[in-house]
Length: 569
Image (cartoon, rainbow, N blue to C red):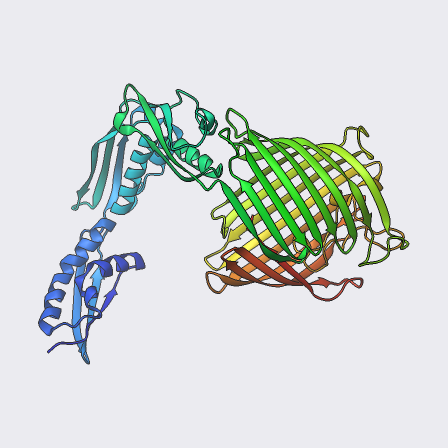
């Protein structure tokens, strides 16, 4: 007579050992399969040997198994009561790696991290992983002919001891040879600027990964494969083959969008990933929104050599209309960018000219008392450093970003005002588990000037809005003039904390508290806003909808709707 299946119970072991037994014992494979009584008893008779086999890799060689079989309705209930016995422990570890390899930091680190350590319970999985990590670090640092000459674990069951014995013959250490690029659309020699090593440097596998990441980041190619030509290595030299496939040359983007700070609008973009065989790039962006009209163009010329240097020339027309200001400006930019220890450094000159009004409230006439008008031209050098680290560009679980920028006029040369400014923005993201994240943001800035009235709104500090204090309107916070109108300040200090909880992989909610303000001198009066939000990881990126309200503020009240679409960092 056939019955429905077997329910297996394992007792006497911790969770790890229980899982190992359940995955090994054949009884567990018949939970939803019909079996006869004869089959059940045959499987039960085999179980002790299978339990012992499952526990040996974890250092238990003397396990004893008792069990029982009970029929429950049409099913079978099987219990295995396991006594794992005393474990085998590691009493000695012998690892022999020639000094020329062992003294290299990655190899030395892998040896130091070897597990199981002396006195630990023998764990074959840990042993194999540690052994392979040492071997991988040796090979990854140029010893491409390395071989293990001894790899054994001697177990003495009588005294429950184990001795680990490992040895390597590493051979010679190889150096990088020629790099062969295949499938490139550029003139010979152009892609050498992306090679992160110098001719004759020792082979390092992480340098190959670095080359692949740099070529992917250049956005010229849809396929990048970097492989060492190990088969044809010779005389201590190994060449590198790079197979490439060009990406689509022109990229067109566009579509409607909505943002609390900008209103409803459309944006269009045209990017030429490469203009010629020298790798020049050209990007154009048009924004037409209720509160922002912008047209920008940027032309980039890569420079020979390392560090990803490039000259950039751009123009940006901006017509911005907020609750407190209106400006029309034209900005011309010439700068150079390069990588420095993981930081993107930008240094150049800006020429900013235009007209503006500050202190407006809605659509008031321009001659309303309290509205300040300006018309200025400013020419100033600027340098900025930007660094971002995140484990996933779409949804960061652990990551951070930091931006620091400094700009200053050279006296009043070619400028209507003398000013110096330092700005810093930081963000930190930490996921506690699969469903919860903490996001912390901080912004700070300081300006020194002999004529604050000549600074356009984009060089003044305000607070409030979807990327600032979400309990207040966009640029609604800051110093006021004698007519009680917000005109911006020379200092900024603000921070925000957001906790997110996700119900699914795409949908979640948020709670936040923001605090800070723009101010002058030492007159810092922080304003606090708090609220709740909705999160959706959409096909076009993270969409954040937040409802915020001021806390303990008689001047401001009500609910502020904030919508932001874009990456975490």
